Amino acid sequence: QGSKAEGIYCMESGIALLSHRSEEGEMTVFGVVGPGECFGYRSYFADDPHGARASALSRCKYCFIPRDTFDALLYSNKELARSFLRVVARDQGPRHGPSLRNPQLSVRLRLIYLLALFRERFSVEQENGELLFDLPMTRRNIAAMIGTRPETLTRALGALEREGAILFDRHLIRVIDPHRLFDERARGTVAGPSNQSPHLSPTCGVRDKRCRWLPEVRG
Image 1 (cartoon, one colour):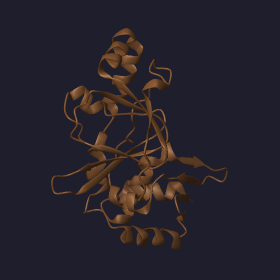
Image 2 (image 1 turned 90 degrees about the vertical axis):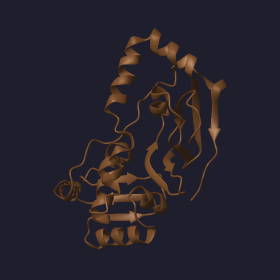
Image 3 (image 1 turned 30 degrees about the vertical axis):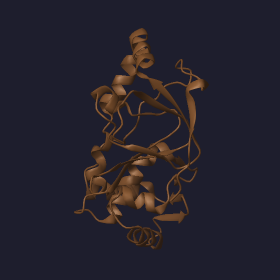
């Protein structure tokens, strides 16, 4: 955060948390980056300093693509340029943050909204229709994303468990009746599309000599 955008980053493996720290020291978590996803491109295209930082939630390997190399890729491959810009145009970035941290919404609804955002990326539909989420975040991370305290999040999870809506075990959340749960979200707030980062193939022309391991940050 605050450094000059000299290129973009492409995650080859692992999961990283995107966050912004204000001048007052308050941290706002607004997204995650997974394998094959790029980050840092918003500041790159705007020619602005990076407005966020990436902290590893697991052992991560990322590839840095410097400006000259990335510009050459875009100029030489029109299909790649169109695909990348199309996804960038659809990316909401941190704009869904106000909905996730809206104090007018209950923590319960904010949690359901977060699950809806992560449904496509981090859940697997079971044969019985249930959804199994494997979230790469601690309760503290989740609480930071929805603007609440970890103990308040724990109470909201407990209430949903007692109702039989979910089963929670460490980083695994099993949604028993997805239609019912997400219908509740739809009634309580108007949600936008999920935040996704553009994907570049690992064979984009920048290989292991520019790839580095991102140290794991726990907590």
